[in-house]
Length: 75
Image (cartoon, rainbow, N blue to C red):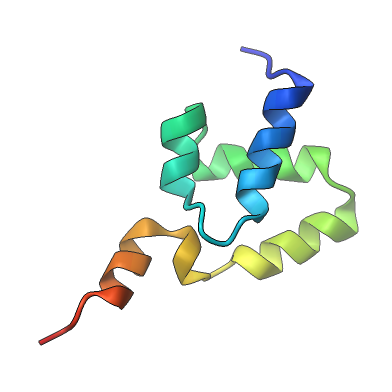
C-alpha cells in the first residue's frame, strides 16, 4: 500500500536515529531493511542518501543482533 507523507517522514526519521534498529522499524511499519533503503534512496537527495548509507553501514546499533551481541559479556 502507498505510504502517506507523514508515514514516510516518520520512517526516514527512525532510519536516521542511531538507536532505532531496522528490526524496530519493521515491527512498527512492516518495512524490511531493504525496503527502508529503497525508500531512503527514493526520498532523499543523492548526497543525503550517500551520507546516510555511510552512517548506518555496519553500525552496530542499527542491527539488533549485532548490538545485543556487542553488549552481552562474552565469558
